[in-house]
Image (cartoon, rainbow, N blue to C red; front, top):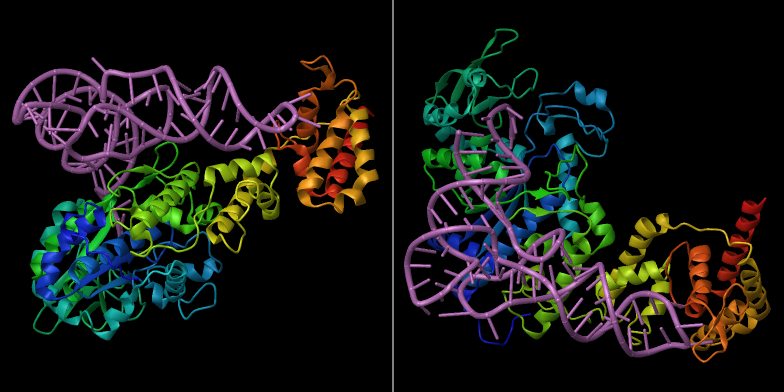
Length: 541
RNA sequence: GAGCCCGUAGCUCAGCGGUAGAGCAUUCGACUUUUAAUCGAAUGGCCCUGGGUUCGAAUCCCAGCGGGCUCACCA
């Protein structure tokens, strides 16, 4: 949806994706196009950081497109030719995998039995993950690129400058690794293992390397082309940049040193390394690094259970160079921040607004939720929202016009709020038994609800709520809940309502109970009271 | 050892050269048949310290102090 309004002055936009786009623009204008890359180690499954990296790169790319009008591509590069180092914990057929240690992931059978190789399986998972969010990208398999010859010219070039490349890496290595290091990792012709061995000889003229199997002592001469040799990590990155002409790639700050070395190698090969962007890592609630093995922090599955993906995008948009804590409490905050930006975007579709980037420069056209997500979460616990319909019942008082059909975003938030209630609030409820003194009031309420059940169900909701509230008061108009009012008449003390919440809802606070009965159902409340009275008897016995 | 991030209200943080802000917490008030959500208001800050640039600095630069992270094995 292009805007009729005057084109913004792209050069003046301060949003960081535009600042990044301005860094790539000069070199891209020389080439007439730009190549963005994000890379993956295929040994692990896609995670919240994967989402962040692709989302952020996509925003830069989109800003680039708007600003320059030049074509661009985003390739998602999977390093699936990497050798399997250890058997992952969370897969079947571990014994089978153990027999293939050291071989490229694409040369190992799929332990899940669904794809032609373990690498192909993980690639499929990665693609499904990215597709679920609607990212626009081209998938690239390292194995395919090596075998098809797309890296051949670059590999031969690296062979020419082998010693110079090696000399860049050597000073960064410990003595023992230094002895065996080579930027080339030949695939063993018989075992298929990715070999980490020194090159005894490099033969640029024939395009081969000569090395020795440390176990058998056998010497091999292997062509560096055609997928017979893979480049070692930092050299591999540089090779890819050089061969494909990558213009932009971001990475976490743990890779700062790798970026530096890979850039140096890329220059030795003869190309300007891509514009790089370093983002900070995510920390958990206590400021510790999030690691999959520790299980701290949040998984993307958890986030998406309690909030829509747009809110995660909002979180990822904010200040990539700053370390941020990623734990449960930031979810509602991110949702509401996103909602505010979205509303602002509707009034002013400015590229300085994060929501502009999250929505690819378009303005969403469904109505804004009339309440904040924080309020929905609060309301969900207060009203014991076990089902979305209960939350909708109470929402109707704020926004009579809002329905799941007319307010799709609100509908999604309601679903999330109910899950939040189920997972975090419901388990903490403590249902106490009514005391002997309180029992008569509960019995009276039970009796009147049974008596009037059919009558109440026939009423329209508003009237039913009011009638039910009257019954609640009548039931409470007895000891120990009688309390003199300001005008001297006897009224019902708040202890009656507290007792209701504690005994029937397992909470200290709750909704106006007549309204709750109307939404929860008379029959349901009758069951609650019956259950509570039974508990009381059990406790008394 | 090398590098990065952060020090702003009680807590979590926003603010990126022009009168110190938000949410939560606290206090008070409104609303409700006397409970909740909600709404309104108030309280609350040497913007870590010391220099520098500037008419003007929370903001930019330098130094220091404090907190934390990452890389120095592998990708």
